[in-house]
Length: 253
Image: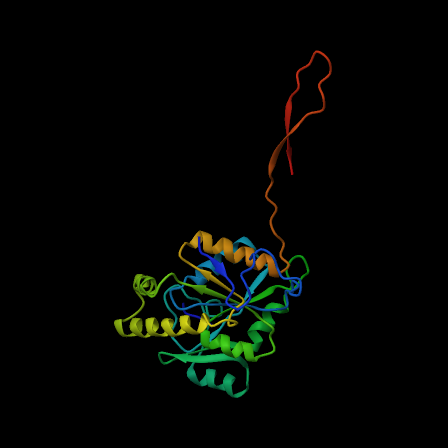
């Protein structure tokens, strides 16, 4: 539920660990949702889009509900489920949301049905698809109270100034809404950096490095069909017969 080479360090008290190595007591489990959060302008949606593109059909995006109007290029049922306030309140009353919050007069929520829709469709390998939730910090608090057993990744922008720069670059904010988002981002950063709030924090000061950090961490914690890239290796050929020169040949592995 979101509108919206970096160092990767755990947000909890234990010492930093190699992001490509999952702890022995934290087995890979695709049934555990992946919660990716970060303030508006952190670049989390861009990173997730790259992850979905590199690993097609292995993740499923939990489509959130919102009462705000669609922006140019957004599609109902894909970007969000765009609903009226009355319809949103009906889902709230029926306890159909895992988490929901209100920001700048608009409501956002992650429904139980949206998560179930992802996990009900397996990946081509037959393993469950990983359900991804793109939510704000307020949503993280509520998910932690649920029984989802989610894993939590926080995408941290390099600075508050960079957040404002990125939001202005979108051209979708008024001066008032921009100030509100920046103020919210400051509060989210303070809360996100409290030890134990997230499993890992990725600083997005370079999109390529941030993505590699995210990918390495996800591969370490979920069973994915990782595309194999041929690596060309040169090896010595068997000893040449008398009168012939030794040669080299390539083996693709």
